[in-house]
Amino acid sequence: MMINAGCTTLAAIAAVPLLCGCSVDVRRDTDGRTTDVAVRSPLGHVMVESDPDTPPDTGLTVHPGARPSNDRHTSNANVSLDSATFGVTIAAATFEDDEPPRALVDFYRQDLARYGAVTECRGDVQFPKRGNGSGSPFCRPEASESQTQLVVGSESDHRLAAIRPQGSGSKFALLHIQTDLENAAD
Image (cartoon, rainbow, N blue to C red):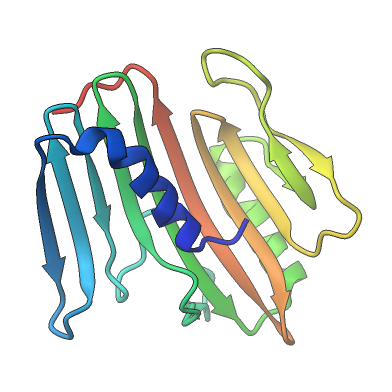
């Protein structure tokens, strides 16, 4: 579950119905790179904020010695999609580290524990099927999976650290995902 352009694509696809009668505001940094995009419509709005120098606030500690990932297929962003009937907020950041995956798994197990019971998964993280988004995550293991995911919270508000080997070190993603099915756009 490494973060990639799919996160941004998903937000864009979800936003299509919101684009009727919309305004779009695009901000660029001094190098001309797009950093923030805001799309507002009568039905809701989508905001994507990214700053390559400041990781999004996932509520998790960035491992000492980690550096932002330079992979062009990953990105750091705060994404917000709000409408009259639902809302989704995602803070996502990717990093590289010289430490082996086991050291990062141990570090993030402890860091995530301040939010509750941590589920460790090498496979697919799942949540119980409940209408209110509550319930602890569980794992559907996959024997061939090399990535370890640590997750805490409920389907409607959870934090996740996804860690995988990269050379002699690691690549990892930190996420905080919140959903609100009765969110009203401002």
